[in-house]
Length: 356
Image 1 (cartoon, rainbow, N blue to C red):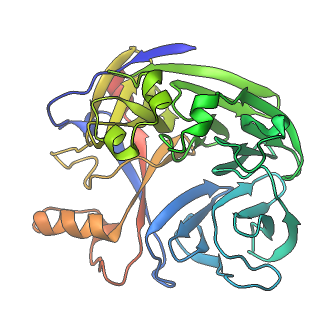
Image 2 (image 1 turned 120 degrees about the vertical axis):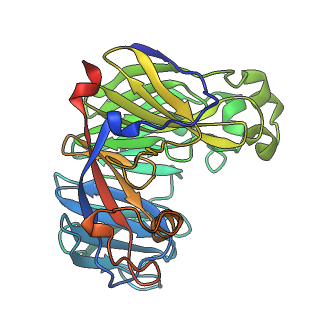
Image 3 (image 1 turned 45 degrees about the horizontal axis):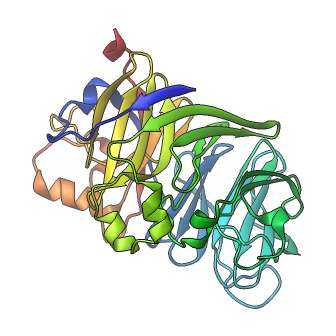
């Protein structure tokens, strides 16, 4: 396990292009027009986008529309909400978790056709993921099953989606009673690997059907004292405090590690050189002001095919291009209409020269 120590800096990072190079853009088909993006997963050369309209839309790696799951209702294969979803690459399953109906809905991940529905009364996960042909559930609380101690764990592994085969991290009473998600999304897809950091923790694990492997211990500046959890401090007060908490969105590509956490009321972004064991940047945002290699500022949202990737929302593109209308932008962003076009996914290559 590698120890990573970061400190928040007080200046804007200006040379992101020294470390990352935008090498390709995927402009998602404009029909159907998506709502606000809630999650994107890239698996098996497919892009799965969940928006706030309770849909999952699938594209190929050229951005062409393949299918959508838009099934709010009370009939077979329909749901009240998409509280979480996971794509099982091995079995070609796309599974939706509907919290209100306590069900799992199974769809073919190639064509979006529904083929099964299973009751899933417990656990009641806050997030789910799939890797290596198995399913994982993040379970920070156990109020719905206080007497079933077998479910008083933070992480479960299931081979078929409904039967819990393995459990990890027995609940700490103070954390389980404090209903605040410092880490809203504990799972991070890194190509064929899946990372996990549980609520209020600072250790990043790699998950596999065979168990867990501790990869990184991230030492944040002014970490949250456990006493504050015991006090059940008001969530907004905690978010705006000077304490650091909530490590998530952890992605590795080459020698670079990217992750996020909350401090001083802002999402702090960290870029760390694992080879040199040094911080490249830690602050409110990453931005290559020269604009040569990373022309449009945006967070990193995953790793796929040995590259980082991130999505640009129409609002981000419009704001950036309006501020600098005469700047030369990539062909994929030219003639872009933020009112009628969908997000654009950018793939970033790690610049090896930066590590010499």
